[in-house]
Image 1 (cartoon, helix red, strand yellow):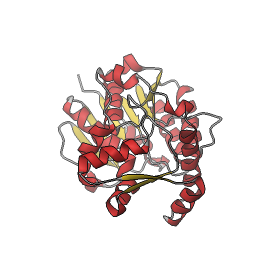
Image 2: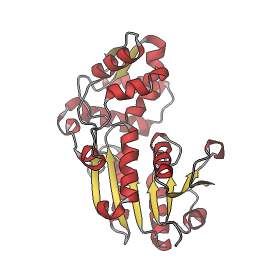
Image 3: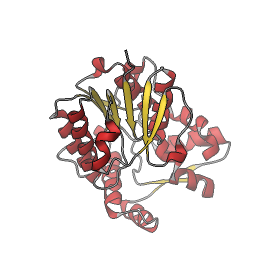
Image 4: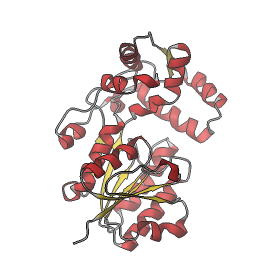
Length: 288
């Protein structure tokens, strides 16, 4: 009997990279879809396929023979349409189960364009005939490896617009581990939507302390107003839609309440505590 094929769309980012490792270690047959073939790595059971899934004409060939599918694409405006086209192709081709990486706050009422596109995609998946699992992670710790790492290296500071707000940030390695479980043991997770967070809500002052401890250099948190943050992002050339999405999320986080809530899903599914900000800082200390 042929092994089932797990296709991973989004195989080279922080989540996808770790997910491919976990599936390979588990002995699964994996088709890893990527745009840039130079990022392919030799791994047992993994076949790399160069494809741009925004090209609807190649979806049938990309997904042919797939039993289970993981969907993660970039978040540029219009990504929802791409994902919906992937879902429709998967349904047409008889894929048995889809795990979709969504976002916390995905709803019809959200003020975040990004979260709204995720909600639209969730609706398409739930209204299909497919078995599915939806993952709604809170903010990734690995997001700090971009501008935060740069500003820490440049001037020992972290800039954000959430004030004293606290967030149960989640390590992308935990998201990947949950995704792997939802793919491998799909029957246990079919029809489930999981909110994924760390085990504790923290503020950026705690992050600064964790990086300081891991690197041995002083790092401070400098809170910015929404207008100051908008100006900063505009100067970096970030699109207005992405800025609006970021600031909408930052406003929620600054206000507290729902954005501080901790989910137990990671601990329950993985049978261990979620990785902490201290774990993250030690793992990536060379980046700071």
